[in-house]
Each structure stands twice: as structure tokens, then as C-alpha cells.
Length: 214
Length: 241
Image 1 (cartoon, chains in turn red, cyan):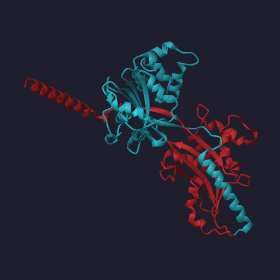
Image 2 (tube, each protein chain N blue to C red):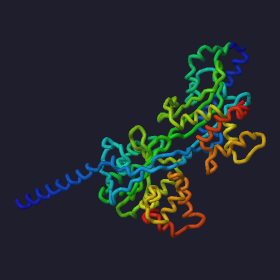
Image 3 (cartoon, each protein chain N blue to C red):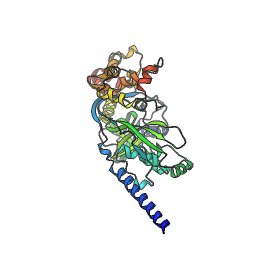
């Protein structure tokens, strides 16, 4: 009998401390763990960025879309956008095509984004589209605007890989004097291209830089 | 626009070439990469946990995981009992998650929760490219092992926190892990009474805004070109590696 009482007491004590422990854990309100506010200037380097100009009028041509492609690529995803227009193309007649201009691949918040600039055969203006790769490795059109997405679209609209690499290069080539003169305005203190500064310079110097886009 | 059959054949060839080139680009790109950055003004919060705040592996199944706060994610990381759970905690899921053997999970399931736990020290929270980001410093206590210090980079996406390993922040997680809480707090808020910390604050601040790049340079100067033992001794947490 004494043994039974002892066991019951132990069980009760165990439950008592168990409940206290549970209550302590349940009482933690993480929403209050914030700290006071301060201001900071943060420089973020994009973990991956790659720029490429599609080849036109060269042995490695890869720049003209005239039909819907069935591969799992950003270019195929773009071709799907114009499936209706391409369906009017026949063996004897191409009534609609899309000329691919440049592509920029950037890692944004752990997602690979493919920005492609292109021109439709029925328009003279350059457009830019953004695809991201989802968990199933599919290319999805990004319709969510963000500061960074908007900047990359704007940069690709007003530049190409050739021009960006000229800005990127630390050495100056006499042939590209307009770019040389603007280099200092597009880099940060660490001599790395800053996309905000770059976008501003590209917009403000469209006329003088346009010859590098041809 | 009407074009000849010869042009069409040319176009078909172009398409084939493009198809092959695109395929190769999708898998691997041989084009040179470019380094790009963005400078942002951000609001920043620094929080010191109450001394001895322990997080234990009390979760036993993925169904119990919420990850609504960085601290909940830390607890979930400690308790993860299978690969699916680790994937769930990681930004980018399976593709980005660290792969663990079953023997690791067996240890997690069997470990003594009272002797294997995280003790949180402080956290730095800010926005990075529009994404709420947090670096949490902790000590990892393990049974029969030496204490290990660490800092996890966490990001909030779609109302849930994830562990990530983004390299875009350079050495900031290491700074958060190594610096003493009172030193970081003094630099961030400018409220330290210690003259040397006030001077660091001045060197790393522009127009009242902490410049994290300058903070990185300041931290790097303690180690290179020569190790400054006096500064390391004064500002580095002796328990950190």
C-alpha cells in the first residue's frame, strides 16, 4: 500500500512539473522578440548573374523563333506565348517571327530568373519578359513585380550583354569612349556594378549608347 | 509578310540550331558570368535574447511545425527527423536542402533533448530585396561534445520562415556570430558608453545609417593584414569559433 502511494505521488509530481514545463513553452510569445529599429545601408551581391546575346547573322544563329518549341527552356516558354501567331506560319510562308535579342539569368531570392529581351516581327519596340524556374524545373512567367525584377527588365530593355560587359570591364577600350566616360557612375565603392546606378545611367544616356545596341 | 521556301528552310535550320543551343544553355551556360549588386536602405532590428533561452527538440513530427517565427524554425531545424522535414525547413526545398543519412536521423530521434539544444544569443533582422531576412546567433549544446557557436541565415517567404545559404551577404553572418552582443548593439544603435565602440560606430555609419559594407571592412581589419589580438579580445565572443 505504501509502495502504491509512493508511486502515485511520483506520478503526480511528474505531471505537475510536466504541466509547468508545457506552460512555460506555451507562454513564449515570439512576436515580441523584435528589438529597436535602426537604419542600415546594405549592399547585396547577386549570387549568380549571366548575360548572353543571341546570335544573329552568325554561324551560331539561335535567335529566331518561328514556331512553338517543345523543350523545357526559357526560349520554349517564350515561344508558347506566341503559339497562336506561329500557327499561321506555313512551310511556304512565315507571317510572324520573334527575334531573340539578349538573355540575363539572375538568382533572385533562391530562384533562377531568365529575363529575355526580344522583338516581334510586327513591332519595332523591344520587349522584356521574365521567367523563373519553379520546384518542378518548369519555366513560369513571373507576373509579380518587385523592385529588383523591374530594374533587371529595364536594364535589359536598354542594353545588351555586349554593352554590360563593356561597363563591367575594368580596362577602357578607346573604341567605346561613351561607355568609358560613364563607368564610374554605374559602380559602387567596391567597383562592382550597381543595378540601380546602371539603370539610371542607361535611361539617361539612351541616345549616346544606342549605337551599341545595333 | 510572305517569305520564300528557301527562307523557310533556313529558318528551320535556325530553329534546330536554336533548339540545341537552348538545350545546352538550360543545363549549363558557358557564357561568362557578371557580378551585379544592389545597394539598399533598410530598416534593421537587433534583438538580444534573455540569457539562457533554450530551444529543445520537442517537436516529433512535421505536422507540428509552423515556422511562423525565426525561433520556431530554429526549433524545427533542431528537431528534423527525416529528409522531408529538412527540405520543408529549407528555402528552395529538396534542391537546396542539405542531404542527411538515415543514421543522422536515428541520432536525432534518440538524442537526449535535455542535453542537446540551441541556446539563442541574438538576432539581426532586415529586408533584403524585399524579403524579410534574419541572422540568428546561437550556441549548440551537445551531449559529450564541445559547445559550438553558429549563425543561421533565415528568410520569410509566403508567411513562413526558411533556412537559406545565400552567399549574397558576404561575411555578415560570420560577423553576427563572432561579435559580442553588446558590441553589435553599440555599433547599431550608437548607445555604447565605450569610446572604442563609439569610434567603430562613427567609422561604419553614413548619415545615421549603418553601412554594412563598412562594418565588414572594420571586422576584416581585425584579422588582416595582421591579427589585432587586442580588438579580437575586446569585441569577439570568446565562445564563438
